[in-house]
Image (cartoon, rainbow, N blue to C red; front, side, top):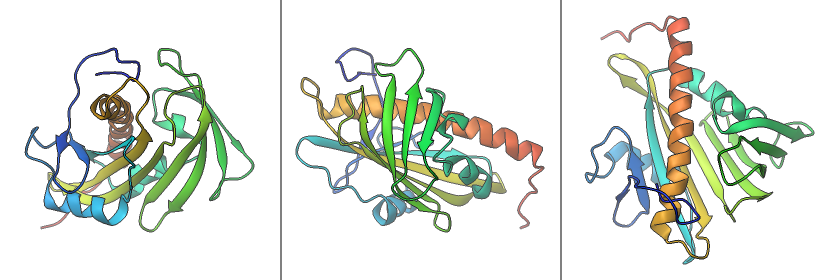
Length: 211
């Protein structure tokens, strides 16, 4: 993974003509994303990156029902419930569109604090959108959209989670380096989300889908 300071190792992602960059953990590298996933991106993940920005989407297939996964994702006030790099979150006032949160980052990353605003929260369509508005990091003009979509995995209720973002490319870095760095952080978050959701699903005794 190449970090935003230009130091690191490799990353994964594929180019899709006419879109931007896509990375899917269940699809082999180089084949792009499946049609339904691309359609979700077109419908819900609308970013318009400028010349000095990069944009990407990461997919994660989770063996847990969408209501369970969404119960973790939607908590703007508690990202630490599944994001391993978050140590604490403080929300100013109640949670609603325009709410601000101060996110404290655990040691080991080149940042300690991020200030973020809730842009959109839709419990019917399962959409969460945030924008970073400050902090001691290099993710300038960062916006992200997370969506959760029901699917069937091995005959049981599952969830496809898509997280997309747009961000400025820092001076001294390329678009690929910037995307690789952010994708790696998102993949860590989504792996943790999957691990926690799947444990909860086992406790919930999810029944197989008939037929």
